[in-house]
Image 1 (tube, one colour):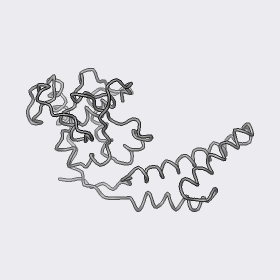
Image 2 (image 1 turned 30 degrees about the horizontal axis):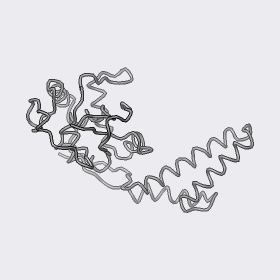
Image 3 (image 1 turned 180 degrees about the horizontal axis):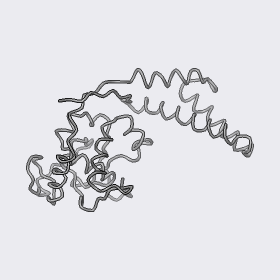
Image 4 (image 1 turned 90 degrees about the vertical axis):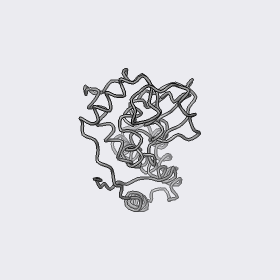
Length: 231
């Protein structure tokens, strides 16, 4: 049985850039409205110039707020689409998969088998890895991953996996500047975003593919020498 959801989503970086531009204008505008009278005049003028540049980057004249509103509506309405999600696993099912992964020291090449895979059995990391690849092959010391905000490990990961099914929320939370994306190093080692990688592993490649997460969860092949941002 499939659950039906309707989400606004952005299918390319240009559209997402437009969304970010609108968000910046609103943020700076709010700051000016709240703090403007008490601001240093040079700082106030600098912020106003920043707003004007953002308007121009969006193809609008500075101060064209009606045009900004129309653009915002088009992004949220015209880009709205319907996705049919497979039934999200119960906490019991999710917990069983989680326990199986913790018991295995390496990801199984066969996602239905729970035996450790040898590094020689792992395929090379492709130039553009997908979320389904992470769900099947990602490597990490999964036992070291803990929940956040006082939530136990299992329920944190369970809720994180559910959150990742929302394209709009995922993009705006984790990929605002295309920096906090999941990064994969040699031999499928997770270099960034390891909690999200573990959530994908628990859900499994079949579920991740059916849910469409390959469309909005960005994965990059990364040099492991770069600094980690463990999200």
